[in-house]
Length: 215
Image (cartoon, rainbow, N blue to C red; front, side):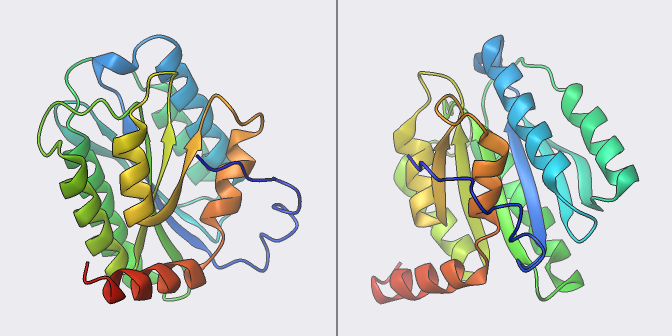
C-alpha cells in the first residue's frame, strides 16, 4: 500500500503532463454505508483538484458498468458536472469489477489521441470484492499489464477495512500504478493525485520491465 507525501504536489502540477483519467467507482451492495461515502469523498477530492488541462471520465459499476462522464475537460462546467455525478452515487447489486475496469479503460483509450502529451490512467475505487465477470486475480493482473503495454496505467484506492488487497494490489502492480488505502491517507486526494501526475516515465519503465518478463 502506497504511503506518499503530498508535499510539493500542487506546486508541480503546472509542469506535469495533463491527465486523461478515468475513475472506475464500485457502487455494488458491498460498498454501502461508510464505504460509498469514502469513495465519494475520494472521487470528489480528485475531481476538484483537476484543472482545465485534464480530462475526467467517471464509470460506475456494480453488476454492470455505465459511463457517467466521458473525457470531460475539468473547467468550471466540468467540475460542476463531475461533482453532481459523484454525489449521486449509491450502492446496490453485485460486483463486476472487470466490466467497470474495461469500460474505464476503453474510454481512456478513445481519448488518448486528443492529447499525445497526456498521462493515461484508470483509477479503481473499490473494496475489491469481485463476484461477477472475471474474478481471478492473476487474470485481472494480466489484463492490467496488457493495458500498461498500450500506455494506460492502472492504480487503485482500497475502500474499507476489508478490501481485497490481493485483487486491487495485483492489478495496480501489474498495471504500473500503486495501491492506496483510503482510510490511511489524511489528504487522500492530494496523495493519489501526486501519484497520478508522476508522468509517462513510470509507464515506460514498467512496460519495459513487463516485456522483459514476457508478460
